Image (cartoon, rainbow, N blue to C red; front, side, top):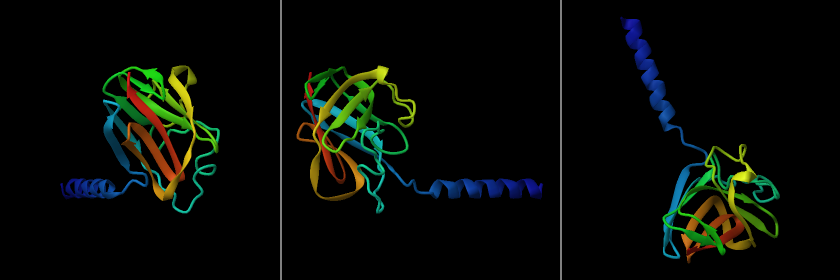
Length: 166
């Protein structure tokens, strides 16, 4: 009986300790109004931690899940136009293909773990935008909804795309 009690106590202790472990790329959520539509983005925030991010940790020319740990999910409360491209109300995977002079923004039907199972055939829309520079170094990846745009910032890079009701 004492052994069973001791095993139960040890199991509970380790379970409690496991809960205290902090994720290296914690979850975050960006919610805001853009063009009369509520936009919600669920993602995980990786940090630079002294590493070269764009063109290094995040290679140019490869599909990126636009965050860490899981595919970034983007949800629209109504039909929208993203940089003029129609997208129906709903929840989608947000992928990107970073480039030094141009980024491809991908809205995809799949919301799975990572970009490993990404299938271009499930793209709802793809469009390109030009990256800009941040005013200061951004250590931790951040997505915001501001000025009718979804804005991605990390390291010294800022990428934004317009959202309008559609």
